[in-house]
Amino acid sequence: MLYNVQVKVMPLKDLLDPQGKAVQNGLSSLGLSNVKDVRIGKHITLQIEAPNEDAAKTAADEAGKKLLANPVMEYYEIELVN
Amino acid sequence: MLYNVQVKVMPLKDLLDPQGKAVQNGLSSLGLSNVKDVRIGKHITLQIEAPNEDAAKTAADEAGKKLLANPVMEYYEIELVN
Image 1 (cartoon, rainbow over the protein chains, first blue to last red):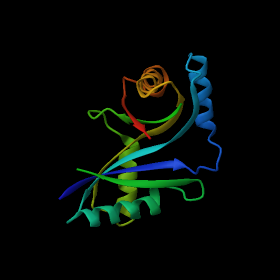
Image 2: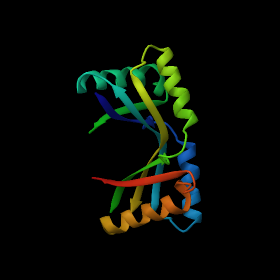
Image 3: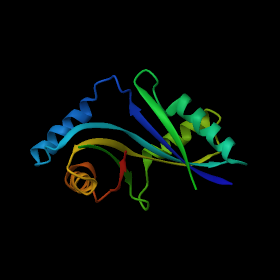
């Protein structure tokens, strides 16, 4: 079966996110000064062929570890969607 | 109050996603050939100071329209988190 797995890769909470800061300043210039913090990461959707949900999650976890996230700077979260 | 709004910005479904295709090939080389499709977008978390949920969503929507997404190539989805 084909499973749709969403992987969210974000900069670690303790790290500065200069891209997010730049976007925050941009939003402020556009009149959206009520946006107090911005952090930017990646959103990855995977279509995984697997026999069951657990196998799909395991494959997504392996993908996150091996390629999608750099653990020095990022963490990732996996979510299975119907 | 401070609201945590998650914005997902993804390439339009009808468009090719070369970055996703490259990652799919990379995963395949790493032995994850059961990943059949990969699409990569941005995940943005906004901390918005607003009087209520609706105002926070409206501000996030404005941010999406004005700066976060390029409507020619991308669509965005907004989700309010507790």
